[in-house]
Image (tube, rainbow, N blue to C red):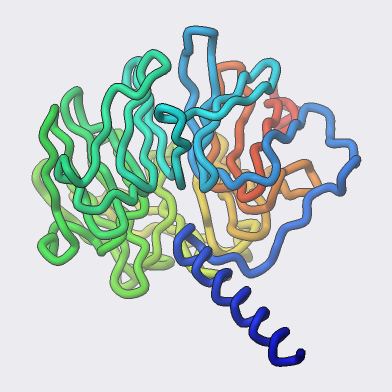
Amino acid sequence: MLQKVILILMVAVMLGGIFVLVNGDPTLVASDGPDAGTQLPAGVDQVLQGHEFSSLAVMDWPQGRAIFAGGIQGLFRIDPETLETSVVTDQGQSFRSVRALLVIDEQLWIGHEQGVSVLEKGVISRRITQSDGLVDERVLDLLGIDDQTLYVATYTGLAMVRGSSVSWISADEGKGKLPGESIKVLFRDSRNGIWMGAYNARGGGVLVESNGQRQFISLEDGLVHNSITSIAELPDGRIAVGGGVYTEGGASLLRFEAGQWKVDQNLHRADGLAGEKVRHVFVDRSGLVWFCSEYDGIAIFDGETRKALLTVQEGLSDNEVKKIIQLDTGEYWLATRDGLTRIRRDVVMPDQP
């Protein structure tokens, strides 16, 4: 009997390890939100708890404006007014591990476990898979470059979609072109520089391409960590690069000087971050900077000053927030490890109009 119990436990541990490997960052500690039946703070709502989300987008729909949220369990459409939800499928087939969403004109580009799909007028109008030249279909991020060009980041390389053609840069062939094998995040700054952040056990860091020039930035250059999770541009023109593994990491703030990007400042928990590993960096419409941690919630900064700390105690669905968007109404939508959280603007900064 004892041997049978031990065997069951070993299988459970192995399956748990496989789940972590397939679905992204490992989790050390579960974040407990408010107990069932607990009243949430006014102005805070939770949607689709029990689902993991890592991508968000807002787009006008024939029935009105809609929030699209993607994660391990698929792609969902949410009415921002009624909070009614529905599953988005491809001919009845659910998407798997939707890690990237990008709105281009009236199209929703969906990066998922089996390539890229384009949702247009309620139906899938295009699919990009291995048969089209996408060597690795496990998409991690999407970035529109111009009207004809799209970058597709994957676990093992980068695809460039130009019109109907797809070209590929693998990690092996991309030495000098890619910062690492797994391209976790893509970003375009106000100088039209293209940033690529790698999330690798070895190597990693960021690569920025601008005006035909490439610059690699890593630990050796003062970067806080080589495993990159998020890149954003701050109101003062600096670039925030967040990253880390488990409980290590932080955020590096880079300044452009003498034709090069240089690490200007590194932020850690002691500097006001909610936790060491930074999972996502978001700059809202008023210039507030949200540093989302892996396990400890969100620290919101106004310039150099931390103005607020949000955790499950303030109504977050989970302390791990992977993506944030803000609607033109001012309200925020947060994709977390355990559902979506909607927060009204005045809840975050009650003293500001």
